[in-house]
Length: 469
Image (cartoon, rainbow, N blue to C red; front, side):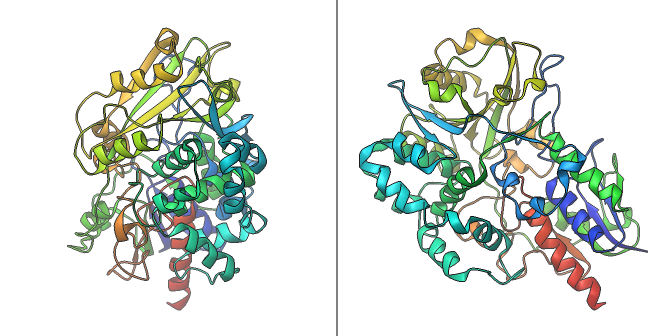
């Protein structure tokens, strides 16, 4: 009998399997698709030689992840590549606010009236960032805080809505960039703990940047898989699990799946009936015959570029998708241009580019024109650079990754109490009513992103259980 079986080979499932194997437990991992990866994959979606990331592309949380930093993933081919700027947010006047590795450079891009306010916001946390990240991403009840004073101070700043935090800024540049940071998790700007979302992304950039993985996001998953194999774990692909009886006998079963899929497979009935899924995304991958013709020079040097004219436009787009049930006329866009720093992603002189906008849960329309109209506002002539495009709406995203129910790439709404209590109101989010079944997906704390910490935290719950039995 195996000690543990893990279902789902996304970053969290792979991390949970690695953490258990590192501690001497026998582990087998089962994945429905033909390769590992989940939200961290790389494929030729448009033309031969153009390597795209179907979901996550830039990795501020991965490079800062306490779980990944404790693993020798560089030995298995994982190499982080950093653009000159982690992120830029261009404006209609041709200028831009930036999120730089340097706090001073970032603050200066906001203008003199907000430079000091930004420095006072982030500088107290940076000297303690590694400890803060570990404390913030390990909660709840997986480890005692190492620096409870800094964590409490972070909570005071981050638990209120981001709209409260943005009152510190007098001008629109800082407010707009910060609103865009919050929108990365598709949360309404006035939601609980949205200030923390923006702060985490900003601090992550200052600490270690927003890199891409050389060769694509698949490199993250492949490194985790290779490490697991070296530790003695086994990986089985093309293996769809419909019920627990489909799996070999084990002392524990760990699911990197959506809560509703877990309830169906494990027969947990109405355990997660209160779990809510959030808005979806409409994503376009582009093959380009040259770099994106951004008007703002800063955007040309950035790995990630946020698109939204101001904080009001961003807020309107988020409300339309999450509360009003309609696609926004001017969607807020997150875009990533990996080939700015990684020449392996496209043929010589060509580029890959990735953009998505928020749409209602399960939306079935086509956002292509709205996305490209937004891009043309800040990069005139963009359409002339397009060689090919691959579009994915909520249905296509869900077909590629069953965890993305209704196109929700966060595996659950990041709003209301569910922001803090995922996937159900309990102090033990990784456990289920079945004593041998656990959940480790992005539906559990600390939530969405390629960081493996949900898998790491769930593995702790599993090995404590196994050592008691």
